[in-house]
Length: 111
Image 1 (cartoon, helix red, strand yellow):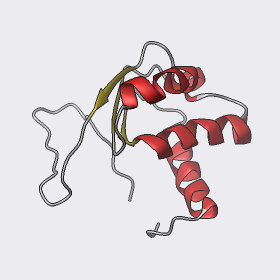
Image 2: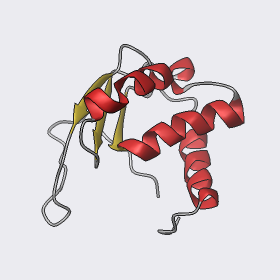
Image 3: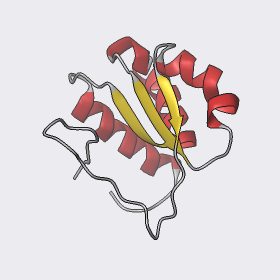
Image 4: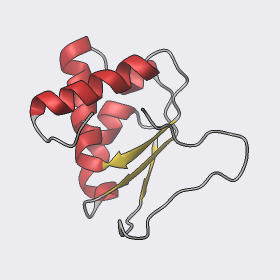
């Protein structure tokens, strides 16, 4: 979808994520903390629902800004649910990678 950083570009990404996952059993979300929060706010503004209203989230793996578990915790709980555990991760882009240890999906990549 390109690497642009305008509101219109983010809204297009959010729309794609929502359309691809709205009817799925989403239990984990990973990414950069501020856009994850913006996604939750966007979903409420556009569709009148919070992520916690459609998904039973168990884990949010978030990075990019310090103090996510403290500074963002109450807002994330409001949007994504009290049951969702926040795990902060920080990796250098030069060496950050992920892998899958079994047949269960852990992360979803949109094409």
